[in-house]
View (cartoon, rainbow, N blue to C red):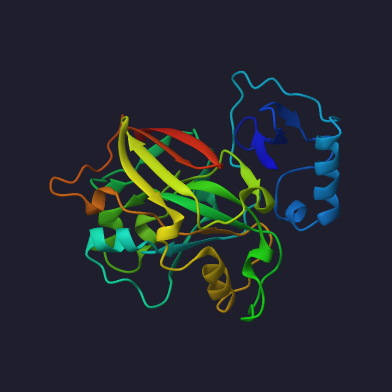
Length: 285
């Protein structure tokens, strides 16, 4: 299923995009698309049955804002330097273990919302990423457990980053990762059964119409399954938590000088095969 949330910011309603591309209203069945829903197999079953029976009313998508596909996000765990080609372009050694940092849930905006270039920024960068949405509580997953069984679905994430704040201003990466609007998410949360193998997805990103990133999740150093298992050894993953799994080559940081960092007025578009497309206009904060 393709689950989404539509409406004005802070007042989104749950919806579903059916096989014919028609937007369907879920508000008569569920309150929201969130961790509570994803953990409830019965509720998900009712949504699926209603969709298959054609019982869901259509919504007029004209002028309707698409919000983040997940409400009440718990935490956003991010994996850095997780693509072989991205590590090469930045001159970094591939990590021996996954690099973990966090983004606050309040960085999340809709897939087509405006993204703000922070005040004083000279190195705002783009990163298309596969987001993993957790559907079952995962803690200390054992080697004989299937980590993908704990995944509810997947979405497109844009891990916008400010490289000077991240790398040159001391401390951890958090200052360059948590600026407002720095995590557009969506348009859809696509359930895991529809996605299949998460290591066979293509990712693309354009800046002002020019293709910058063109990669595949097959280039990941640590697979989605490995990442979920690894993270569960250090923290509990709850339904509604999100993991951003890293970006392929093609970011501004890895380009020759002068590096083409983002400015107000730039337009970024990105997509992952089967998971939808985003478009953001960048404006000065």
